[in-house]
Image (tube, rainbow, N blue to C red; front, top):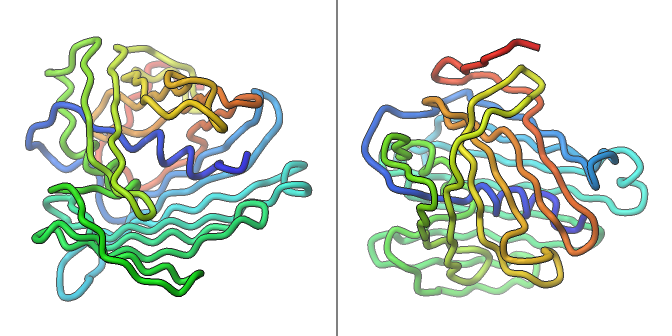
Length: 260
């Protein structure tokens, strides 16, 4: 449970074959997710909000992700996380990333400024009062911006079952190579009705948190929005599931086959 929101964002940080197309999201979009532990115990909630703003005179999207524990779990393990990403409205390349978390007393307070021209990350660790400049890969993404980059560039017609794609992300103070496998299409039951989805298998590091590399499964809507519908994770102890509970401000119609 220590990695509630971290796990969530890590899972949705994925990329596949892409082509320029109409924007999948815009100002005012908002998602809320409910999380459950071992399929029955409510674990917490998470939200994602998109807003237009300016950063150093550049037009950007400012995305804020929040996560917190609820119910019984909150009494013995409290989580309060906040993630922020400022990224270019056209290229979806991040300029700034913020991670401020408190997970059962384990805290981090980081601000990262990306120099996309010179491939540098300026890391300000506010908790430890240190600053570093770290080399990054070209066109580096942060763990929030990657999700929106994918949604804007995913070309469904080119996807083939078994396709694997890699993406370069920067997380905390290091470059992170992420691999994703496309598993095909599936219609799933949601709180809103049956929805056609695209199913993915993000590969993660096996060990203390996850049982094995193939412990995660992700479903996103098969429409122009590319909405994250569900995430399932087999952890070293128990399992975690996140389901879309509410939304507003979608740019395109949300396709539902059967209304609940």
